[in-house]
Image 1 (tube, rainbow, N blue to C red):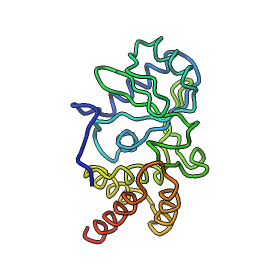
Image 2: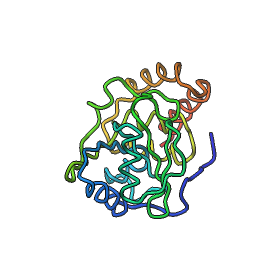
Image 3: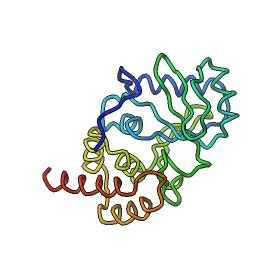
Length: 196
């Protein structure tokens, strides 16, 4: 299990996330954003704030770069796996759907269809990435806060743990990270669920 490593010192609450979405909507261009991790949990009301602001988008990186530059966001790097920006002194991580992965862990088949549209502001559609992928990417990373978040999600959402475990193992076997660590984290999650 890893230690907690945050991208931002301060928390971001729903107001700040809505401010970002409103700013993007002012461009009047079609954008699809899929909230990941703690960002998804804040937007779903499962926790009050997050230190990590993470979205996946279906927009090409070059087009997103043009739009973000127009609204005054500052690009930190242009890595396609996880493109980093600054919004109100906070780091904003953008993942792109072409890779089909989040930090080396494969997304589920039909991940878009399984995700939930929670807001449309002008031409900006904001989704919560499906909970199976959110749990999987948190479990693959395996920091203490990830286990805490996963237990909250399991409690709040209708997650079939047997189906999840089977699917997680199949994807862990082909992930770009450590398959062994994924399996160890799954065992740790099952231990925590049993002891909860």
